[in-house]
Length: 325
Image (tube, rainbow, N blue to C red; front, top):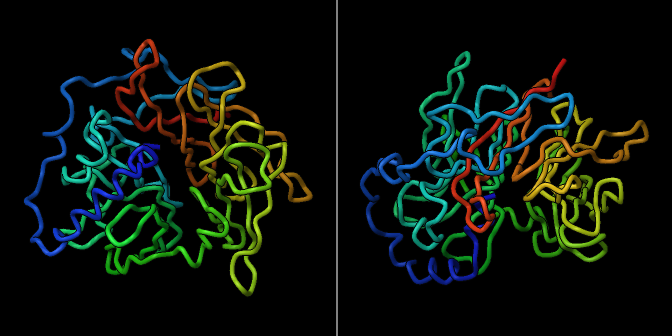
C-alpha cells in the first residue's frame, strides 16, 4: 500500500515543476542497499505481528534478498509461482517528493529457484531521465496494468505496458479503456478469462467509503460496475482485490472484525450462482494486498511494522502464510 502514500497532490506539482529534467541523461546506478536504514525489523522485534485464522500457518517474512530494512510492498505473484513483483522504497519515512529522486523507489521483480529468491531487479516503466512513481501492478501474460504519477498528467493514472523481448515497453495511458474518470477505478484485478474486472472505488451507490465493484466485459468494453454487496462490502472500507487463479475465491483488504489494529485480509468464496459468500478474516494486523500461489494454498501479502504506540510506520515486508492441509 506504499504507492497510496506516494501520491499526494504535492507530488503532482513537484513532478510538473521538474518536467524539464526529462531530457537529462540517465542518473548513475544507485545501490538500493546503501539507502536503507541500519535497523531491520522482523518477527522478533514486531510490536504488532500479523496473525492467521485457523487453517493457516503463522505468517513469516520472505528472506533476504526480497525483504530488506527498507519497504517492500504491493506483491504480485505470477501464475508460474516463481516470479514475484513488488514495490520497493528504501525508507518508508522519506516523503514522496524525495523518493522520486532516489533512483530506486519503484517496481522490482525477483525469481525463485527451489526455495531461493534471486536478487531483485528494477523494472523500468518510464524513459531514462523521466520522473515517475509506479505501482499497483497487475500482470496477465504479456500485459501489465499499473498506476503511476508522472509528468503530463494532473492526477494519478492507470497505464499499461507490454512485455517485449523480456522487457516491459510501450507504456501508455489506459484511462480511456478503464473509464477511469467515469468509473473511478482504484486498484484492480482481472479474472483469468478476461471477462471480469474487480476494483475498489468510492463511486456513488456504494455501502460506505471504499467498496469493491465488478465490471463485465462487453463488445463495447467494460460494462457498468456492479457493487459486490453486503457479503463483501461494509459501511467501512474494502479494497485491493485479488481473484484466485481458479476464480473461486476473492481476496481483499478491509477493516479488521477482530478488533486488531490496521488493515486485515479477507476471503470470500464464490457461490454456485456466481455471487460471493460472506467474507471471513484470514490475516489480521497491518496486513494487505494479497496474492496467491497457482494452487491457491500459499498467500503472500505485505505487512507493515508500526511503533508500539501506533504513531509511526517503521518498515514493510512481504510475508507468506500457507493453508494447512
